[in-house]
Image (cartoon, rainbow, N blue to C red; front, side):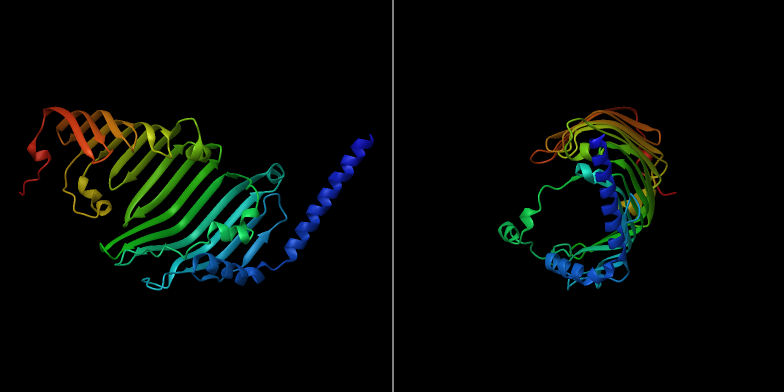
Length: 342
């Protein structure tokens, strides 16, 4: 009975301390730290960071959240516009109880209204090349090496909406624009992930849905990483199903791929080059092997109009790439591959 009373008193004391901490945190104005955050960012990257909105912390919940609005990151001095990135809203929510067992349980991360510019100048220098980081010895002197072991990370949902990523290459004159209308990754670090993505690539709309293995299995698991994805873009429907033995090394591939469409010319915007109006078309293939050695395609079927090819192929990637294929056909029509002007 005495032990039970002691535990009860200890539990009440913990609750009182947590409530007191929450009350204290709720009275703090985190906007006072905006300049300090900007100064630290400048030290780490050499770029100016501005927080134009409010920093808000909601602590009166088991899933406290931190939100920030109006973030701007300066571009390189030679950049094509002043800001490398602007973020309308960033929010993260975590669970408190798992911290007691050393796990940082992130319930959700929300990124809204991000506009990011990546570019290279004619000298080949990228605006994503920041100032030199501190050397390990200096970081240790500054106390960075005494932080201790980081907690285990569990991430359950990531949501990105109304985001835009632009890449410009002054050497080639190439510009690529990836717009994300909505991206949702849900599941967990040790649970299978569901993905939903809708956006556009150079103004060509696309969508992706499906599922895959957990993030932990992706970065270092021993079991094969399952994958089942369906994508639609440029009038084509692409399906990828199977597993990857070692995702980090892109080895142990065991995938079934299917591509179907009515008109290849609909892919012109994605290819950034004119594609002839050929079709309908389809491709099915089994893919095995490893990216650092060879990609085996033991089963390959291609159709274009009424023409059909079937066989197998191997792409040798070690050293100079070499593609070998053995294909057979019962029917090939030249008009399926070359459009004759009327």
